[in-house]
Length: 216
Image (cartoon, rainbow, N blue to C red; front, side):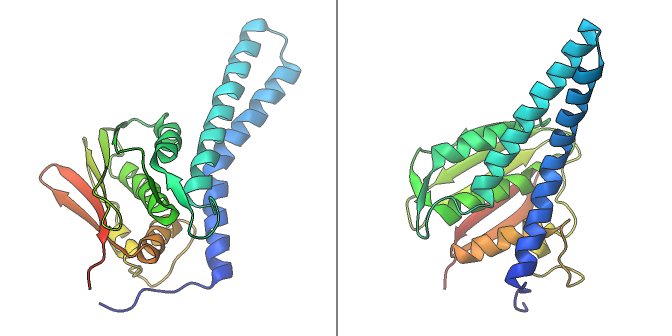
């Protein structure tokens, strides 16, 4: 296997920023639309609908930003540890409006921040395997430094998104990385920085995403 593709730090920052803006622009745009209706509309029923749109969109934007802060942000100083319970909280906000139902089975322990970031980024990939809804089961097993991160998904139209496995391995099929594929590529960067190896496989009628400590 060839060496993973490397990105210039400025390019990486720009691509992640583009991805984050894409994730929040929809609910923020809905908030703006709702506020415009409130300014112009006099009908009480229409104003209530607009207010509900603003409320739900604000909650969605907040949930996405809180998730992004932990999954992509610094989240503390170098070498910091993060409570897995905090990861669960932002994960539940992230999947709240999705068709899939998430079960979180993990002890409330402190893990190195990169492993928590890896778990949340694996969750993003896992959600893409159940485009028509289903179940997503998140587990954290074992003790440091050999903690195992595992997500199992089931549902109709189950799939592994095209090119994701190669992107996580740092080897995009065409050798290019853009804002559309930066998230799985970044997942691979985090895994390698954490000393972990990620596998994504179809097993029977499930997709299993797993990260284990890399062995020599």
